[in-house]
Length: 471
Image (tube, rainbow, N blue to C red; front, top):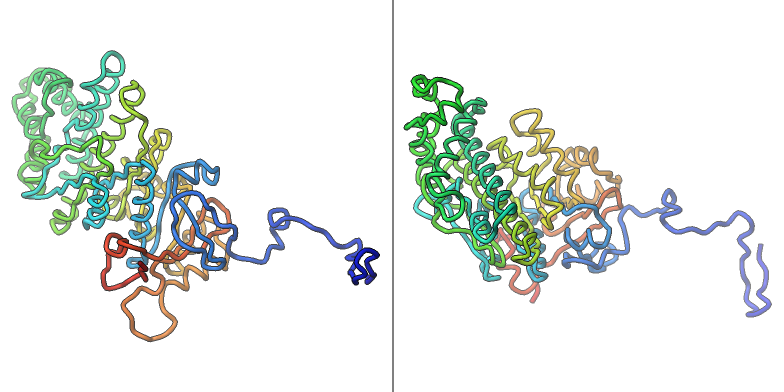
């Protein structure tokens, strides 16, 4: 119906009784767009919205504070060369500016070393002829316990024993390629207790090494035979395989890396910590898995020490970002690493600790040893409030779509980043620097990141493929 306005004299259209008004939330079924608008402006600036060109900001802490997510997990999934690590470095560097302390718990390629050094952080290079990590070192927990007393000290002592025993059991299982029997675990626990008592207790004592544990088992004190539930005279023959496993840790592929005291302790006050494992990358999967196991355990000790000191009022409450890059190498190496990552995503989210995981494919999470490990690995994505997708295949997108709601438009957009549409040669990955950011079942945000200033030098892991840095 057309009529004239008595106020303006202009023609107006009366919509009639069939017209309704509503927000895009109320009228979601009729909303025609496949990508979200109204980009979040809280957090680390990531890039510009591919459609609206708004600046998009994202990081686990800011989005949780803003109520956009319910946990502090962030996972980046996509093909090699698409810019996963560059995005991680942008988030790492941005969070450092807000006081968050990044912990790169095992950097297989040394890619985070320049970023860490640019912020005055601590870099520890692990490998044969380089720094050594004692997997039984109390590390930051020992430093923290020296400042505590009473119940808090006893609790930390129990935590140290548990971490030492778990690390030792995991390394033995990695060396043996199978788990240890219950009685063997009890023997190793008793050996650690004996060594702790001999060194004067946790406070003021030195951390035992694997060589010390082997000597304790060889000496076979009565406490160890009681732990094995065998007579003293039978302990030597019963513990042959356990002693062989410990000897293999000292003289096998891991020799020179984990068979002595820690040479460079983690600095609790460092602005960032990167444990560079590029020196062991070429040494094989067993050594890499062992290195990641030791560094993850060491990093977790730093988190626990910080929490204990904050609770006792001896240090400020700190926020940490644990970066787990090249996850596929870790998870395939040892079931113990699956357990470590599972603990990181479950326990530490209540202790101001965010985790940033990077992997190529969900198949990486399904390639671990047992059904129980695969179930744990699959749960990592469920416990990540933010999921970022880079270039990937249609098959991979369909797999992710079973866990994260993806529209057809979103899937087509991400898939289009996988390869160029022409045969024109060029060194740059077609989808490099393009991301789809998902939070829960919200419509994803397509973003393109451009490197600026010194980021081209610090972030780009492929110097031959520029992401279009601008000064």
